[in-house]
Length: 316
Image (spheres, rainbow, N blue to C red):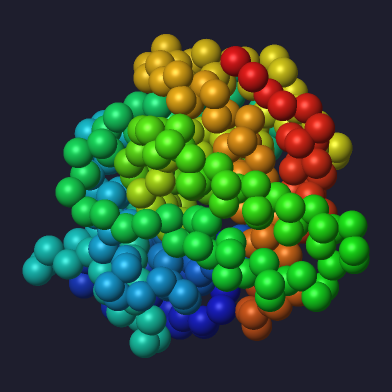
């Protein structure tokens, strides 16, 4: 989350009134993240998050917003976009498409233990099953085609060893994606960015998943791999944390057992998850956009994670 487009209190107040969410009492920009403009908006009725979409289009956004509504209706704890009196959940603020969702209770657990990882695994599996019959489709916009487009753009910023790793891993992932085993992987709507700061907890109780604006239709295994690469590693070194990973995998599989193809391709998809975020962080770091509150993430973190996943495959 960041602030690329400034929103005045009067603009926010007018929007909140149109959504029947009460009188605005506070508007505060949110620092962190890199994609959209985000504000906490507090009203006499409650606490909300106002998001202005800086890259996603009016045509793309219904997939994300109605996915959240679909999941909320199935009992998954996710933000529920607010509608105006005409039933519209996609709005316009400062010339940008915008949405308002309820602010989830709790706080992010940035130093998770096995119990937190198990809660994420359990709810992730429930979310996948709940989204299986969602009637809209949109590809993961940061999937393999985007990797193939973006790698040539970031390669000039890397030293020789990094460039060689990036090229070889991209070739490997293209090979995996062309395989019959990959084609057999179950798929559906995925969050695709379910890091520690996109999940809320109250103590050990998971209270919600949020920030669905990288979601798309992809393999459920990729979604699980992204979680394992953030929740179940040592942040300082990027090394695998087996007890936390075991807790997440066991909880996930208790709800949705993994297929034989998924078990076989878990090591490859863990590498894919690391590659995806290494590429995007290289892009954000070396080709940043202007924003009043923007701190790009360190790309070398996911380079370390990728090297670790290559050096030591995680198997079930």
